[in-house]
Image (cartoon, rainbow, N blue to C red):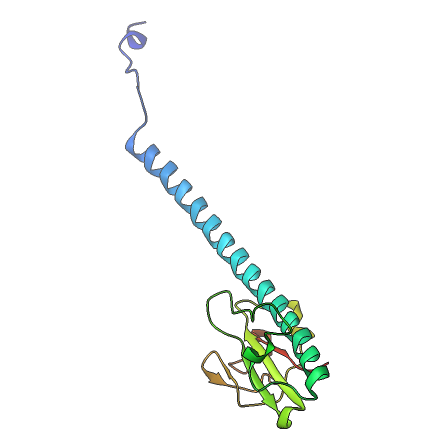
Length: 156
């Protein structure tokens, strides 16, 4: 009985226990931030693809009315309420080609998207994608088809 009467009564947690719990919470918080960031990137990419589709519709209407494609997206004001800009604040890549008979319209996506398998992969080398001149036919800025990020729209 003597042993039990002098046992220490612990109140609270030890420093080690607190550090373990705090580190577990930190790891979980880090995982959530990474997953949330990926979701944001995919959301911005979906917005880019949607806006390029809207621009393609406006370009087709402009071509029907004028017989050629415009030299600049700013000339679409009669066919679209406002020319959209990239969700990160930049502008989309646009180049009239063939004296107005065709065009190249594109954006650099942040993550790989299935829509990249169905884009036009235009063969022009004049537009800049992310600072690197490319035709996007090779599939990516670095030549690796699995790393493709340039979404190309062209007349349908």
